Image (cartoon, rainbow, N blue to C red; front, top):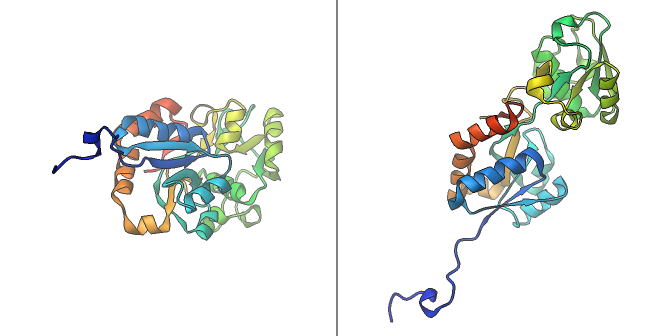
Length: 250
């Protein structure tokens, strides 16, 4: 007989394999699960992994098609042949204070606690730079460190502090630079409580990470994925769900 598939004999016909995505949880997971529900034709299967290292290994090994877990500044993926395929969302750094309500209230000697870890330090300083609170060589960008500051017009007292100590500094009234995750643990939302916050086009925007070979080959699934991720329904979801405290980077 001609034209009969496996289904004609009662055996199930396998559909296309699911498009497996890796996340670490949080905002990235919520956004991708919304993409999966909104665009079922993608057959997107979202898997939560315990660490960035495990995710990179699974992606490099072919167990995942892509991951949503890194910022554009993360360099660890390169050693595994992984690259950015497109922009995701920005989880904004912000400046917070339990005492000061606006930046205009800052005067000489106002204490500002910055995270001491290198990447977070550069991110916090870039935020201060964009709000005119410090000056340094613009070419440094996110590579700037406290020692690079050449202008401090408000005469702020800038101090590097381990991330674990920043919540205590906030509690005692200092101005602090906090990541999205640390602010969230304190019940702070950037759009509502931050005196200053990154915009969506930060150099630290999240990216969708794929194997270099897939980026070069430009498979149809990757084109469809990026179109779905950047679609108006997903934009609306991000705005409504996170109340403007998560910014899209496209």
